[in-house]
Length: 390
Ligand SMILES: Cc1cc2nc3c(=O)[nH]c(=O)nc-3n(C[C@H](O)[C@H](O)[C@H](O)COP(=O)(O)OP(=O)(O)OC[C@H]3O[C@@H](n4cnc5c(N)ncnc54)[C@H](O)[C@@H]3O)c2cc1C
Figure 1: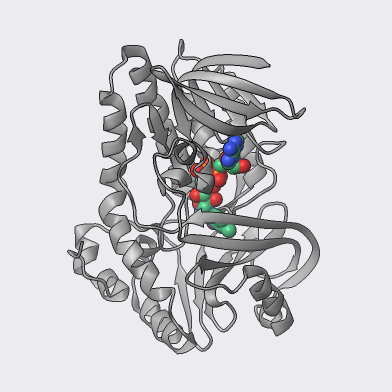
Figure 2: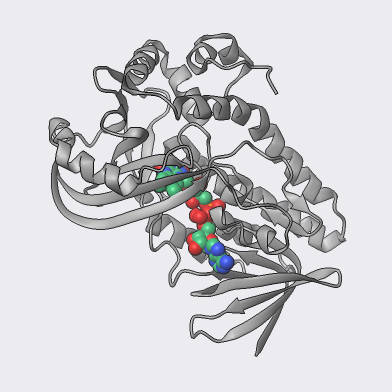
C-alpha cells in the first residue's frame, strides 16, 4: 500500500482547496486529493461573479466575459439595473480552476486527481487518511493538519464526526448552449412561474455560449430542478427572452449548503474552507470569489501554524471569516428562508420592490454585503428581516 506523508493534506481540488495549496509557504509540504479525473471538469457551478473581485484576485481577464446589465424577471414585472459601478462577469470555470491548479503545483503541492479520500482518523497529534487513487489502488496519507475543502460533501469533518453534512441545500442544474442570438451584455435572474419554487438564471458565458439554469432548496421542496428545466424549455420562456440556442455543450449539476453561517471552522488541526465552511452567499449562492480569497488567507495562516506549532494563526483565520460573513449572512439567510416560500404573486411584488432599489442596494443584496448605511436604508425594507434578531 502506498504511504504518503505531508504537513498538510487538502481534500478537494475546487477553488478553495487549490487556493490554500497555492499559498502555503516554502518548507510546508502539502498533498491535495481531488476525486474527479480532472481539475475543473465536470463543471458544477454557473460562474457568475464580478470584474472588480476577479481583478483583485489577479484572475486573467481572458477567463471571463463581462456584462453591464442585470435583469430580474417575475411573471409580470421586470426590474432592469445598469451595473455602472460594478461590472458583472461570467467565468470560464474549467479555465479558472486549471489556472488555480497550476499555481498550486508551481507552489510545490503534490496534487492527485482521480483520488478520493475514503476515511480519516486521528493518528497521534495528526491524522491518517485512507485514499483511493485513480488506478483503484488504496493508499494512506499521514498529515499534521487536514483542510476540508470538499465542498458540500464535508468529507473530512463528517468522517471525523466533527460536524454534520448540511441538511438544507441548494440543488441546481444548468445547461450550456452555443448562443446563436441574444443579448450578451445582460445577465437575467428569473423567478415566478418559469422557475416555480426556485429561481433561474440566464448567463452569457465565455466561448460564445450561454448558461441557463434553475435551482431549488431541498428539503423545502421536493420538486426536481431537472423537471423545472424541462418545463422551462417547453414553456417558450427562453424564446420570449430573444434567445436562439445552438447545440447543447454541457449539462452541469451541483449542490451547495443553504444553512445559517456557523463560525466554527477550526477543529484542532482540521480546518474548513469554501463551501464546507458555508462561504457562498445566502441570497444567490455565489461562492467562488470567497473560496479563492479565504482559501488564500487560510494558506497564509495555516503556513504560520505549521511553522510555529501554535493555534493562534488558525483562530485568526476563523475570526477573519466571522467578521466578513456572520452578520451579513444572518440577514441574507433570513431573506433566503422567506423567499424560498414565495408564490408567483409575491415574486411580482418582490421584483417591483427590487426595481425601486438603487444600483448600490441591488449589488449589496446580491453580494450579501450590508454596510450600516445600507441597513438603515432600502435594503432592509426589501429583505423585510429583523436586523437584530438572533
Ligand atoms: C448550481 C450551482 C450554481 C452556482 N453558481 C455560482 C455562481 O454563479 N457564482 C459563484 O460564485 N458561485 C456559484 N456557485 C457556488 C460555487 O460553485 C461554490 O461556492 C464553489 O464551487 C465552492 O468552492 P469549493 O472549492 O469550496 O468547493 P467545490 O467547488 O465543491 O470543490 C470541492 C471538490 O472536492 C471534491 N471532493 C469532495 N469530496 C471529496 C473526497 N472525499 N475526496 C476527494 N475530493 C473530494 C469534489 O469533487 C469537488 O470538486 C454555484 C453552485 C451551484 C451548485
